[in-house]
Length: 286
Image (cartoon, rainbow, N blue to C red):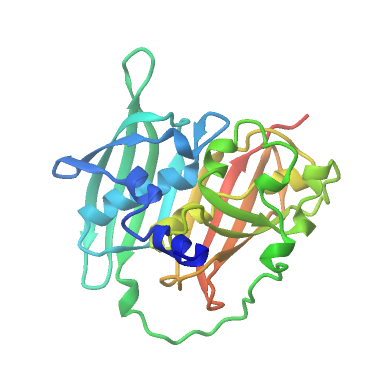
């Protein structure tokens, strides 16, 4: 079999990929789901916030009558660890075009006490029923072709503690946002990249929840180092993405009091703005 045909044959599909398996939740009772959080999506020993949001998003998609997240807001209360967790959902309201629900993810601490890790409020609908009318001043980010961008595999060594999630992503960063990796941060608070899943699975609304939180922090280009934990993250899913790699652009305009915002846009291969997000994150100064 030719090499290209072999690669196509082994390409993962939506519903049958590592991302789908690692975000799958098992119903235990109405509104209660079990999951084993995978260590494959960790950054510096903490489970990535976008992956966690996709887990909660999948549980809400099962609990609510509508299939797709339109807006989902999460407050990250404590850092999640790989291992067993429970998601509890509650239907807040159901309507003809939108349904709203809330969900929380719980784990046990070292003393055996149940700890709430994340709390989410979300509205779901059906992206396939939305009208095609688009009126926008937004433009896709100007990112060089993928073969002119760089991924973790192009560096001398992985960023400490980040190799687990990096192995599961296809991430090619715009060289203009890579000054931090060379010890010369630009100070502009920007990060841009081509994004996909390493096994070739195409994007869907759930994987968009991962995409907005999968790039290196903009804090790196501001000259800061270390973990940048998310305090709150809100994602708007605007349409179902076309097959092919995504382009993700993230900017920070204001760092004050040890907190910064990250505004993300996600564009698909058809030049459509498929998701937007804003998160508040804490940074370590000094």
